[in-house]
Amino acid sequence: MSANPTTPDAVGQSQAQAVELAAPAWRRVVAQTAFETRMILRNGEQLLVTIILPVMLLLGLVLTSFVDLDTGGATRVDFVTPGVLALAVMSTAFTSQAIATAFDRRNGVLRLMSTTPLGRGGLLAGKVLGVLAVEVVQVVVITAVALALGWQPDPAGIPAALLAVLLGTAAFTSLAMLLAGTLRAEGVLAVANLVLVLLTVGGGVLVPADQLPGPLEHVALLLPSGALGEAMRGALLDGSVPPFSVVVLLGWTAALGWGAGKLFRWT
Amino acid sequence: MPAPAVLVHDLVKRYDGRAVVDGVSLTAERGAITAVLGPNGAGKTTTVECCEGLRSPDAGRVEVLGLDPLTDARDLRPRVGVMLQDGGLPTGVRALEMLRHVASMYARPRDVGELTERLGLESFARTTVRRLSGGQRQRLALAAAIVGRPEVVFLDEPSAGMDPQSRHAVWELVRELRAEGVGIVLTTHLMDEAEDLADHVYVVDHGKVIAAGATRDLLETGADGAADRTVRFEATPALDLGGLRDALSGVGAPDGAAPGAWAVAEPQPGSYTLTGPADPATLVALTTWLAARGVLASRVTVGRRTLEDVFLDLTGRHLR
Image (tube, rainbow over all chains, first blue to last red; front, side):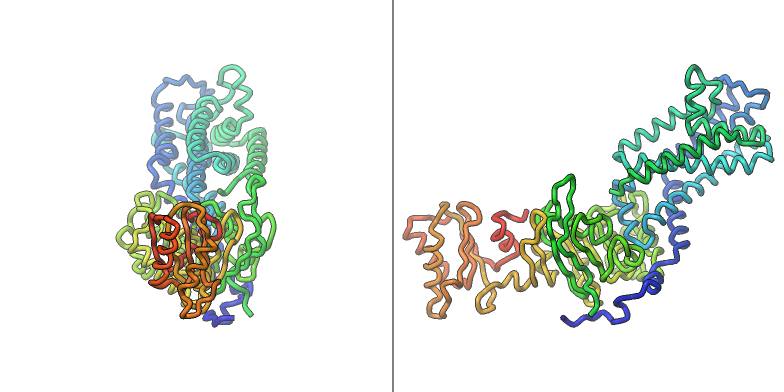
């Protein structure tokens, strides 16, 4: 064997030593979360979909009456804001994340980062936490605008609303991963935007399912968008989340998460 | 004895039933540069991806630092650096920001400032990856691969798209890593990269290793250890190779060149390679022999045997 300059103790390291070579797991995930969040908040197109679009819809629906809404006695801002928050969750957890992950996959970013100590698990954790971090920004901005418009949410419903946000995030992030891990990046770009528009118009997010025309009334309740809209309105208007919506969101999370786990391709 | 940097034994990887890697075996030592050389589509990238834990082999064994890239991934990742062929860099991030981010995954990374200077990254440190040239991306990707002080580094086509100057900087750095004891595996389809840089070369084609050995041994196959030279010429196809070899072997008779000293081949019709102890008299012998047959060679060149010649001899095809 030729002379080997590697010192003996650098060779055959025990597991404990090897782990020390990497930054601690929590620090890796925090770093990835900050990285993902910065990437989203710095990207103009993503900001348009995640922040500007929801705020414009909030202003448009509250200040104008182009869209006829049966608010059931509530003020327009009280009725519309929960739906706008639901839409904000969808835009970040689904559209924005699907597009970002699809391009990361195409550019080899997923493969490269999975060879670093971060690994696939850390990468996924960073992405999910990045989504939640962006959602915090969205909620702060939308809440500020809504309060300025006179929004008076039911304080008792705030914990339930947070639960609904988490459930919605889980379902829509799973859908994002399913798309991003199976379709070409350009395809994901098109589909993720189109689906967001369709769900916004007819998916029971802003306009409640029971006010939608024809069969949509029944279909929308079963969609993750309709369930999230109902859950947010239930929490912030009445102080409680309808159990049916919770079941629907959990069902979608399980099904989409299973599908993504099975079908996601890293290359 | 410590495990080698990389050990691949009878690796098979199929895509849609087609074996892209078909029984590859190779060993890469620590403190050495090992090149996997072959044309595009030979299975080079797939082979290293199996070593990086990015693909699971269909058959065979892969060990990196004595560990399994798939089942021991968690232990291996901090000790292995990877530079992917397509870079793997997110497009919206600034160059230096990306390098710092990758560095944050390690407990004691290299000094980012020093690495930035070494690879000349300062000039585009604040430029987003999207706007970098191919060579700049490659240098950034190399920096990201070694920032964690790996013991083994995989470089997939490291100098693709690089200008000669940055290529030189990269080669210098790779040699320095070798001196520090790092095991380096690089894939390339550039002969000069393998010849100048690698200690060991594995020539792969159609998913199989067709030649392997110390680079020097592959290039110098002369009888007395003297560097062989290759004479190449083009003429009418189907010349009498045996007769030509005898004619050439007669040349060196005073020095006692053995009849087998010359390897004569026609890898492509009308294109001939003569490998052996060439000297000025060789050309006289060749042209005399050709003249006696009324054949006019359209081109005659003399050069050191290259890996291109090795590949040509083995496959009858050019590497590119």
